Image 1 (cartoon, one colour):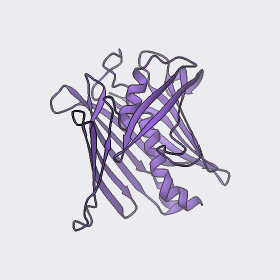
Image 2 (cartoon, one colour):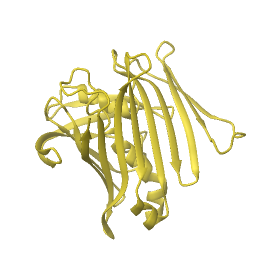
Image 3 (cartoon, one colour):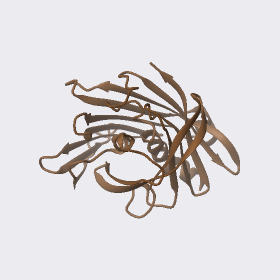
Image 4 (tube, one colour):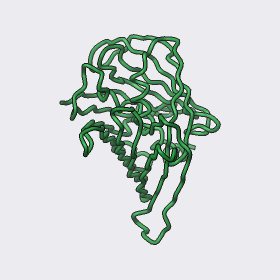
Length: 264
């Protein structure tokens, strides 16, 4: 089961946790917006047989898109040495999300997904006039393989995994609040309920800070990951709203991502 979790699930969990951290500084209404600021995180995996091994480095960079009217959010998660040494597995996930800065919705997602020898490139195009998302996935190692295509109906305000946290972060967070976000991943569309469970004090690289404990329901039937599990995000309760920590618990494993550095 350990190898199954590592190979089939860990990259997906890391990306979900990446997304929990991606839009920390991207909100145009925030006092702390800084185009080009880099947020750096470290991901760790824990189980009874081992404790807190480092498995990934994650970075986020918010930049203006080509037309200067939208955001281009670059997200990267790369496996670290411990994962390769213990399980003989490596992965690299690179996202580029183009976000409509005026209406706060996803316009285009490109992704590079490397898991061992398996490599996939994909693009998702969001057409709000036609109310559809078109997802195209190709294998760069097999040019003769037909592209995998998926089309789904979308709503006027749809996000990808990254911009979904952006939308959440703009909401008036308060303990006890609940929201629902429409998210598209790999051409499929999901309704994700979100609960602001509490306001808690957290120890971080930025010192002791008050945070909202946010719980998106990404696990379960007809959700992003169709199995039992729980995800939690801690977002700073100040003008910056930086996500400082995120965890996923599933199948006896815990994946945790913590903020390590904020670089301008």
